[in-house]
Image 1 (tube, helix red, strand yellow):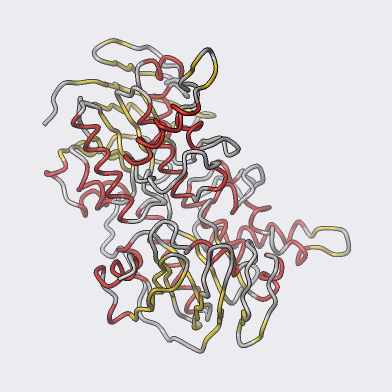
Image 2: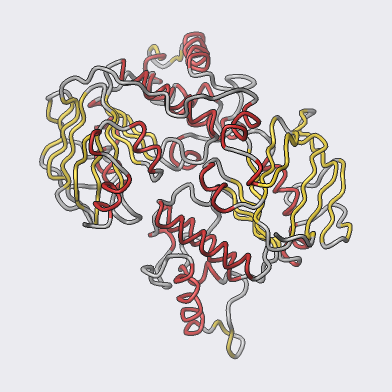
Length: 495
């Protein structure tokens, strides 16, 4: 067990507009250690790591690096010390190549110019290490999938001379295979004496990778423990301040007739995909990175061009070329990238909730603001959205509450079908349970759900059927009774 202390924070406090985000929090990190930092959204994890990176400065408290008091950290000093933070909201330059992003600011040069030959060569080695061997280093980042962009961030951090690596939900867009590759990389870094702060809502990962766990709740440090001295139920209880006896509360319910029928969906990558969803049914999509699961949802919703011969909603055939066509047909889509595709962060909760249905609250050219406020308040109450006000900017909400606002936006339009693209990505345990309950509510109201998730436990626990994808096509359809991790994974790798 590592014992040489590399980072120490004592009595760290931070307030925003009079509200305490951190209240006398301490943190201790040792060389070659993986410290899991867990807590619900809004617990203070992001504020704490921003103080470590120098993006924020603490109001009170001290920070020590290798025993030296650092005072208030600034980003440049943090980078010089080898502290690298990969935030949940990814940062990359989409118009530049993969190789250029990996070595941004550290490009190899020859005669004062960038040596692209060496840049590409060095990038290939790092891409292999992080599970991106299939990606050409000269590919522009805009063409990568969300999961590939996540791994690219890790590749860029690995290319730097890091001493401390902070990973904020690093597997949120990864499936089991990519996650295991990441864990191998983390163990390799540990062997080199690097220290890792690992933030994740996936508790199974924490027990597999961490040495210690620290739990935050409401801006305070609740408990710090060796990972082998605590169990999952205890972590959940400390995180949410209450018992959660059932992680996946969705019960059996009546399944009706087919509500969504898609036949022979084709596109740039998809190969004749056909899926069906009944009312009251939760149907899962699963596949390894690049299999085409997100593309199926995006194509059905008209977000991506497709060559489907038939898309039927409640037996009626529709020609869906744009998202507006899909909305008119009764289809709703919840994207995996909340802040860039699901909400408008600079607008309030009320405007985001009524965004799709604004015409309902308009008379001629005048909005009925009173009615709009009543509806927004009703959905905030029904979905238990934690927000100071419906006028609060959605950017100030936690990830789980942002997801609820997106659900409210679509629920206000009374859709028949929900397409959910990783609906619980990057949200905490308590919020996940509430999202599952909302999915159950949708099913009991007669909706059908087609969802993609990279989390196998989630897939196996909440889905009634699963379509498994491999290289752009359906490799298998598995009913609930035959649904096991082995059967799903075998289909996902083409067996």
